[in-house]
Length: 221
Image (cartoon, rainbow, N blue to C red; front, side):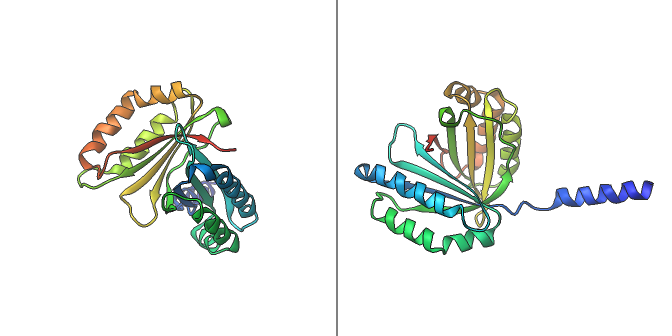
């Protein structure tokens, strides 16, 4: 019996130790104001067509609050191989050609992997407030990944927290993207003033490579 329990414990520990192979893409693009409606249609069409590709998990589409036609697109795929196959697909190439004719900025797309991803709660959907932050680390002496993990764990316990995920750049370990979803702007503001958020910012300041690029978004259904 003891041997069986030891075997089960070993299997469970091994499963927990397996790395999360999920692959992500985070892209930002600014569109000509006159082309906003056409760009939204193109992104939605791209999302629907992408559902048919192997490894597809989801594509999230956001517009910056107060800045129409400034978009963020976050893709989640089962692994890097399937993300790369999707990136080379005819659907992706067609989408990029459409967007290239409408964009004001470059299509800034970067690969990410999981650092800390929790289980999302039921949220407000289109009523939610989303905060997406790019974190750039330029100094040494502080483990930014540990700071971000600690922030995520504490933030998920806050009232109104629907989602708090931290992604790490797949090739440049000093870059991170933080994705927050709050039931309302009031709760997002309360989080920004929370003691653990202030502690995180104070700990990050000495090693930050640039100011936090923190932006408010709304989801585009």
